[in-house]
Image 1 (cartoon, rainbow, N blue to C red):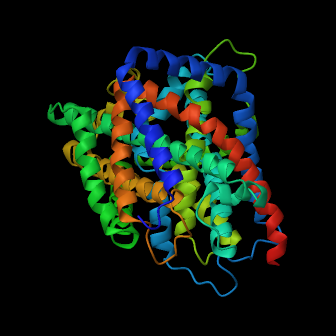
Image 2 (image 1 turned 180 degrees about the vertical axis):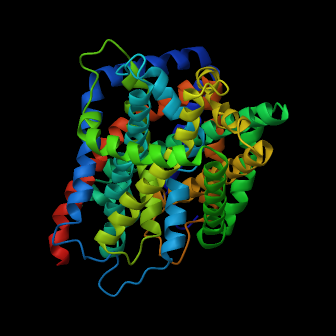
Amino acid sequence: MENINKPRFFTSVLLLVIITSVVFNNLAQSAELFKNTQIFLSEYLGWFIILIANGFVIFSISLIFTKYKNIKLGGIDAKPKYSYTNWIAMLFSAGLGIGLLFYGVAEPIGNLNDYPGMVDGDLSNNAGKALGLTNLHWGLHGWAIYSSLGLCFAFASYNRNKAFRVSSLLGSKVESNKLLATLIDIIAILTTVIGIATSLGIGATQINGGLDYVFNIKLNEFVIIVVITIIGLISVCLGLDVGIKRLSQMNMGIAILLLLLTLILGPTVFIFNAMIQNAGVYLNQLIQLSTWTEAYNDSVYQNGYTLFYFTWWFAWAPFVSLFIARISYGRSIKEFIIGVLLVPSLIVFIWMGVFGNAAIYQVLNNIGDISGAVSSNASTALFVLFDSLSFTKLLSITSLILIVTFFVTSSDSGALVASMLSSKKHVDINSDSPLISRITWAILLGVVAAVLLKAGGLGALQTAVVIFGVPFSIITAFACREFYRSLEEEL
């Protein structure tokens, strides 16, 4: 307990216990409150969410071309602790994971069904638009948020020897105000827990849907969360270099295998052709798609898609950005941005291109009913896709294993980050945060995910992300401003 910051740790734990208790005991009222709050934020702050997400893209990319690009995180003599392969594997596992498996099929088909700008009878145009929107939601914008805040964390910790806290990123005035600094860090911790709990809830839903669809095994989603939380606890106790690193390597290996199998067993030539075309559509329409606010449409597409995804990235920002900073010692700013912004975005485009186009091929050729599956139960969409491919059971089992390993990686990475945010002092590059703190957060992540599922399923999870993600985006913007100001001192 000697390295636990008691005000941050105990206040955050207490608030989460209170919030989950109130929600659990007032499920109907909580669901209604979540729904109304999301509608309010989307209706009145949608323009702001889109504007600030674009701002992070511009900020990240512009740093590659500045005089600061060769500054090393940790100083001129700093050497990276992890190889490129391990580095990319860990940041990929922490930054995406379950989301890719759940939405790799559901997102492109959902866009095809719901986007108001589709042209009746022109499925070729609509398919390109569907994948372009998918790449918008999962590509540069999300990773720009991670790279922006991740740089702030890494520079403050490794070059200024400050604690891994959000308040450490906002300048001396905020740091000297203990009450304000503690409040900001508590918001960051709550945002982290809610963001990760959303993914855990989605993962539990997909595991349950997959087991039911493939094996006709029906489990309670809360049982799944408990089991995965226990596995995550074991990994948390093993620490970063043994638990998370090994799991991340496993994740990447299984993910590559699943990707290649789907590409080979699916409509391979069609997928390659479509991916080239999708790249052109995305680049050609990037500015238009990324600034579209649905101002002239009487529709609600943005609420459930673009605004949800962008705020999900905001909510995940303290978690993923701090974790990426933790493993990025010794990287230059240019190297960091290329590794965190461009490489994962390329991986996303390939993943969505393979799974999304395999699904759209089935729609084009009237194979199965994948559109109906996405509309009725999105958690089964991936498994419905595999129904029309060879080795269906092998693909489904591989997917379920990957969902579980991504689930565990998200859980223990989140516990590590929440523990670091609530630590008393700087966590050294070669050490982990207090074990008791990591265990506490791992358990709480499972509890929050279970309660949010009980309070309204996927809708409650999505709404919670929006509520916590929007205010944190403002904190991130101020952190980026302070980081840029401090770069000059390093030259």
